[in-house]
Amino acid sequence: MTSSSSDLPIYAERRARLASQLGKDGIAIVPTAPERQRNRDSDFLFRHDSYFYYLTGFTEPNAWLVLAGDGRSTLFCAPKDLEREIWDGYRLGPEAAPAALGVHEAFSVAELDAKLPKLLENRSTVWYPFATHKGLETRVDGWLQAVRARVRYGALCPEEQHDLCGPLDEMRLVKDAHEQDIMRRAAQISARAHVRAMQLSARMLREGKEVREYHLDAELLHEFRLGGSQYPAYGSIVAAGANACVLHYRADAAPVRSGELVLIDAGCELDGYASDITRTFPANGSFTGPQRALYDLVLASQDASAAATKAGNRFNDPHDAAVRVLSQGMLDLGLLDANKVGSVDDVIEQRAYFQFYMHRTGHWLGMDVHDCGSYVEPTQVGEVSERKDPLSNEIIKNRPSRILQPGMVLTLEPGIYVRPGDGVPERFHDIGIRIEDDAIVTDTGCELISRGVPVKADEIEALMRD
Ligand code: GLY
Ligand code: MN
Ligand code: MN
Image 1 (cartoon, rainbow, N blue to C red):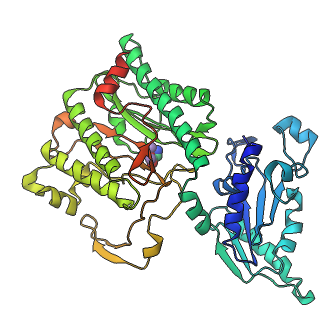
Image 2: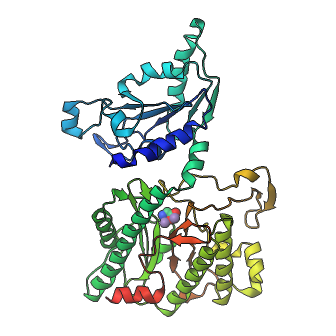
Image 3: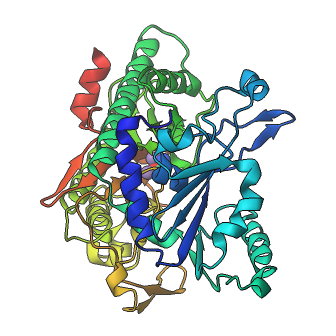
């Protein structure tokens, strides 16, 4: 799925924008991901490195981009090799790469060690992504040593090394129109997959069939691939009944029982971009009273988080809004005892809600499901305050959270997870609910791009009746 030629200007513009941040005598080295062995001679399905893809649109393994501060781009890629191509498939090859990818020049990856010292010579600064590729620092050291071996002939060796993740993360954090379009389409495919899984669950139970978590997972995978997605963006969670209270549960083989809820957290990756949707629904299509009470509470908290998502607000605002609604609801429904924990402000201050809501309300979404980008406002990194965490007594250093800008994409995913415990009303035991949508920040609010799957309890029930 190497990008089409009409996308070439997008990658060229990104390279130019990055080059302008490297300094005139700077140079950047960006490898794609390594191939990884699964067992013996089988590899895991290859997935390109997100930074590399962002700058090239190229999905083959065994490739490197070198970008100089003057904008000159050099690609290293697997050479044409008929025998290997018979076994492993088509390779673009360095001869075709400049025209296909818009880079200035391309060489076989076999020439990387010979060419890199030459490219680094007489540069002041080398940029590469820190702590992302095992062994990359060692490779850079080797190339720099080769440059040093030539200094007595008058060559200069770069004296500075910088983390390329910094500028690239900032660029990737704000999605351009091309990226937003792919993310909308990814979310639409994932939404259809959720609809399909919900409907299969109700239909099989109506027909008296045994339903397992993997039956619903199969529906997700089917719809992802039917929509043209390459693979799931992360390991799908299909959690029946009490399994929903395990935050990182994976789709497994547990029975899906009538009367229980199913939590599905699954999203496809389309052309390098993730979607990330969670829906929680009654296996047989009808919520019980206690399930519905908790469901409506989580949905109200998500509504509050969506209302707090707009340009100019901070990344933490949707979380704080969701926590307030959830905390009040926990008091109203008797999950928390006001005689013990006090008012809603006390619940928030003391983090008493944490017993039932122990994760944050969202994260950046993009090429990676937990996408890159600083959660701290870059203009305010020096403004540090301290607070003592009421649960751990740890001193936490806070910095002002990121100011949202149009084009940033984040998830809104509040939840409630009720494990049996002292004083926890039995009617809520083992209910786990999360509702997750994907939001593009706009000037005036946010666009929820994953609402192709209904979210209101009545609409879910109607969908599951059909
Ligand atoms: N599916 C991963 C997450 O929701 O963060
Ligand atoms: Mn998520
Ligand atoms: Mn998720």
